Image (cartoon, rainbow, N blue to C red; front, side, top):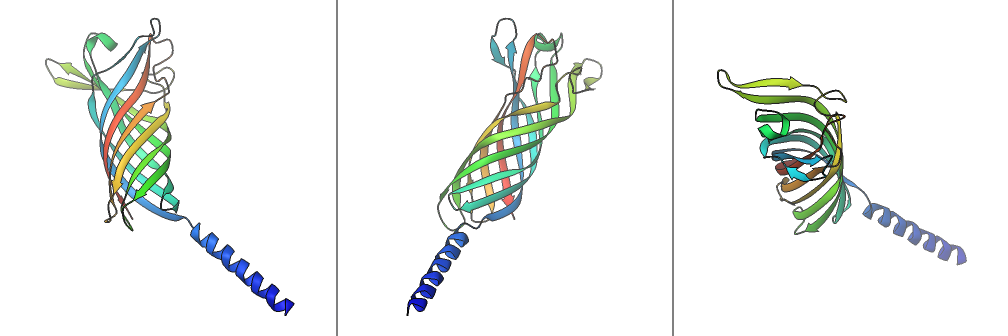
Length: 216
């Protein structure tokens, strides 16, 4: 009789442990995302400490995403992004001519995601985290009275126009539809000073992003 009770108790404990582990199984999804970026720089004068924003320009974002969720209320998200950033620079900032500057970056974000379920597949979400980026290319578009806008490529690195490594934080809010389509608004704030060594200013990326994603 005691053996039967012990076996019954052991079976119950095993069943409870299995159900607990099953409840903690992570759901994973790959996806793609594209968006429009409203881009500018935060400039800070090294001597005075006075900060101001440049005029905004327009860029874009393309990304492959990976989501992992242990529950319907919480998850993690990362991926690989291409970001076209930059700003519209006036003559007083970098020389005697206004410049439209675009920079291409490869970024990897790591975000925590909180979810508010509305049904089996749809939910509102709020996510935040950090990102790291590597500069790929840069271009300045300078007005020319004879040839129109003339483009000039520039280099990254300590001796270049900008430093190559960027990092910062991001915050997003959005909605995941039952059709696996997501709509989101994000804000990215660079923490790294991208200005070259010995510059009179500090320069950081700022981005407002409006994106559409699809989850496989």
